[in-house]
Amino acid sequence: MDLDAYVAEHRGGWRRLEELSGRRRLSAAEADELVALYQRAATHLSVLRSRSPEPGLVAELSQLVLRARGRITGRPRPSWAAVGRFLLVGFPGAVYRAWPWWCAVATGFSLLSGFLIWYVAGHPDTAAAFVGEEAAAELVRSGFASYYTEFSAPTFAFHLWTHNAWLAAQCLASGVLVVPVLWLLWQNALNIGVVGGVMVSYGRADVFFGMITPHGLLELTGVFVAAGVGLRTAWAWIAPPPRLTRGRAVAEAGRSAVLAAVGLVGVFAVSAGLEAFVTPAPLPAALRIGAGAAVWLAFLAYVVVLGRRAVGGSGVRPGTTAGSTVDAPGLRAGRGT
Image (cartoon, helix red, strand yellow):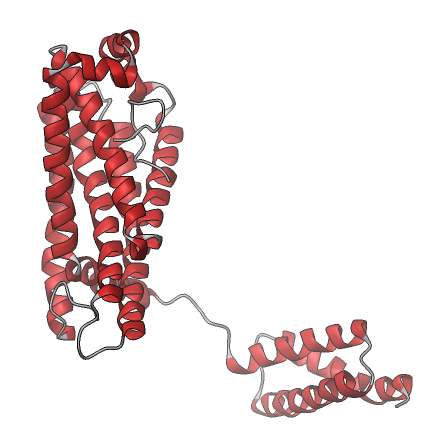
């Protein structure tokens, strides 16, 4: 095939196609012309690829055909209805379906953390073995409280947001393997247990709980949800429902995990704001804790009310299928909430 002659014969049509593809409005006749020119250009592209694969010309014509196809089919536009459906149905429904899992994670984590705080507080040698006597004394004097004011609030909030979102992503992504999720939870429970035990043993329990509670309620709940949804995905693989194959069960649980992951980005943004702006605020502890508790209870109500409605509408029962730590002051090896 004579490439130059072929291009010269059809170049006019390609230019006209490019012109029509770039227009914002088309008349009925121009729209029909656009479709006809697009079909011809697609045929020309196929001929060039098979008979005369000139890379530069093929790339140029490919882009033109893609632009024309986009002009004909229409470009996808953001839909506020889709955003609203995600916020009112998708995310709360995904979290509510997994509530037995993340409630179990929350219960086990709280019991383990509480035991570690009690044990470390009653055995000072244990704390010294983890962090050292000088580090423990420094943590009590100023290290714990100064952590929340070490950086400017906006910078601190952004760091916390990205850190905790990454932790949740790890829990969700590795949930099917089970062990990585349990390891991440253990690291955080150990960190809270050691730091809390040190503070309690030095008589600073009021400082520890007064500063960790305002943001910790929502932040840890987000971590529990991520871990619970991840473990639910693992269970879908281990023991799929009778009505589904193993692959189908994991796929459905994975879709819920994706919805939860996107929603948790917003949850951690709110918890980061609380930790950066409310936790270190010069206000009475009761007010700071009250503000954090109010946001936490609002989130739980949001999940229960809208999630129950979403799950009820879909006919799926809750719990059925349809390395980093939380960042905060404490152990140098892996700091957590």
